Image 1 (cartoon, helix red, strand yellow):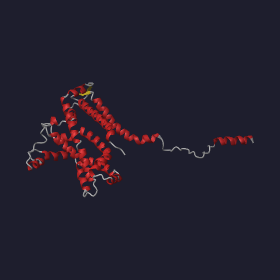
Image 2: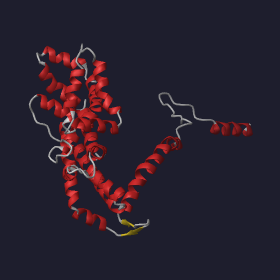
Image 3: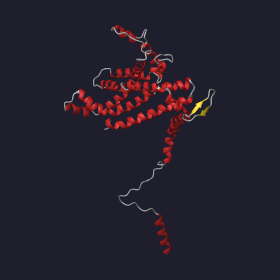
Image 4: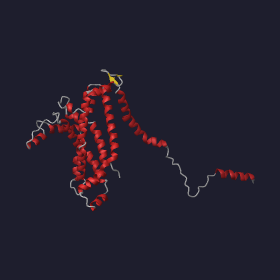
Length: 319
């Protein structure tokens, strides 16, 4: 009897305790291992490290070196940065880039206005208008530059012909230092308008109809609803477009490169920071100095983006 009782006691100790009423035991899922997260995040992390982080680190290292005429490089410390801040062309490039960025931001309110019109209920041909505005986005930059060079041509350009028809004398828009940068910025606004309109249309369609109906009941007119309801609720989209527009404008190069030439008399008034990087790295083969220019541009973009994110707390309204 004693042996049987002891065996029953041992079995009772081995048996799991019955669940108490009201208490659920969490069963660990067989797939809840942290290794699965690494499996899914691994390819993305490797891609970011290989194509973003390592090139950034490599550019920083190259900026402290000087390339030889037949290859190779030597460590020169901060000589490239000291030379960069003493370069008179840098100040002009920064000024031109800042001016281009300010002009490019005019495309944001223009895109908001066009998106609001395209979002009007009962508008005929809405899909056709959207397609027409988006065509420049999918057009090759070389084709855009070629067409606009013909439009701006001072001898047979369409723009001068249209101005001459109303009694206004035209000019050579791309060789005049006073108009070249503005002319290129207009092309940049036109080329990026489709993307901004699509983003704003998505934001407008996300505004609840009940808010507009309540505003109608209160007697608000179209203008009051646009500035008091539409713009505040669209502010997250406006903030997003402003960030990507500033980043894109600070990196402008293709339009300047394809619409102008090195011998263009307007080049000193249109040379941007990226074009300065191109001249140093690919024409002068000074990779260390070009890397210093690129890293300076990276810091400028980083600072401006941080400022934008700090300021958005004051004017962006999230639901």
